[in-house]
Structure formats: structure tokens, C-alpha cells
Amino acid sequence: MYYSTSYQSPLGPLTLAANEKSIVGLWMDGQKYFLGTMKEPLSVRDDLPIFAEAKTWLDCYFAGGQPTIQELSLAPIGGEFRQNVWKILCQIPYGQVITYGDIARKMAVLLGREHMSAQAVGGAVSHNPISIIIPCHRVVGGNGSLTGYAGGVNKKIKLLELEGVDISKYSVPTKGTAL
Image 1 (cartoon, helix red, strand yellow):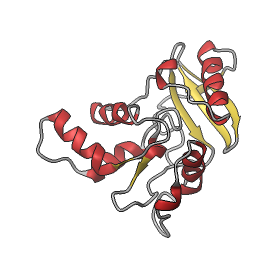
Image 2: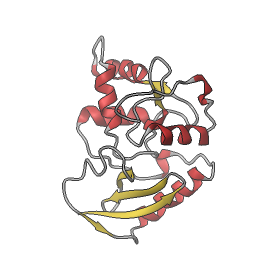
Image 3: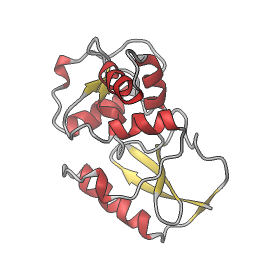
Image 4: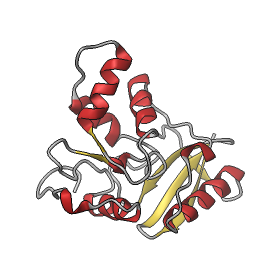
């Protein structure tokens, strides 16, 4: 059984989902793929300890702190390829960015391949079910574009600015699917 609760963030309302012990989802209202990994209904339950832990984590993060991912029990729902991409996302340090190509190279090594498609990686990144905590907002295009954020590029910019990233060296796409 899965449960949900709400959290009011500086970016607007967030929906958290969990089983009894782990966070399985965190989505922004209006986000692409909202509740996309949830295959069964969620029951509202605000009293789960994991929700209290996640809200404390988010309070710290939005106050400018640097809580670690390891502070929370996470159990994102997805296939092996996506799970491996999300593990790489969890390794991106606070306030830093990497490219889809960087992740593709790491995945190629992990899978014993010479090459991995950055587009395949982009699909896995965009379907990250635990936004903000698993920091998909720290991934940028190889051309310096702030593209590919299911929550919208404006929210991606706000998260990166919160972390102290100088976004002036990155471009904002004028067209695309994740604006």
C-alpha cells in the first residue's frame, strides 16, 4: 500500500508518496509524469514517520542547507536501467551540475558498453519519481542548455540558484518539451 501527503514549498505544492518505510515519489503540481510510477491509488496519510523525515529534509534544503540523500530511505519505482541512472543522479554533489553525456558515459562503463545514448539517459532522468531529493535538476545539456526538467525550466533554475550555481553560463531553451 502507498500513501501520500502534501508539502508547501517555495516552488509551490509538492506531493510526496511512500510505502510504510521509504519515499517512493515526490512531484511538483503540474509536473510532467505526475504520479507516473504509481500504479495503485494513494491513501492520504500525514502521520507516517518517513513523511516527517522527508519534510524536515525539505525544510532544511529550502532554507539553504545541504541535507544528504542518505538521510532518507528512498525506494523509487522503476526498471534496472532507470534505477542505475537515478543512482548516478544521487552522486551529483550539491551545487554542481553534470551533463546527460556525462551520465551516458558512466552508464556505458557500468553496463560494459563502448557507448550509451544520452537520449536514453535523458528519458530515465526525466522519469525520476523523486524530484529535488534525487537531484535531476543538476543535469544540463552538453551545449550548456538548462533543458530537460519535468517540473519546468523555471523551477530548475530556482533550485540551481538555491544551491549557488551560477546559471549565467547556461542558456535557457526557447522551445522544447520541458519548459
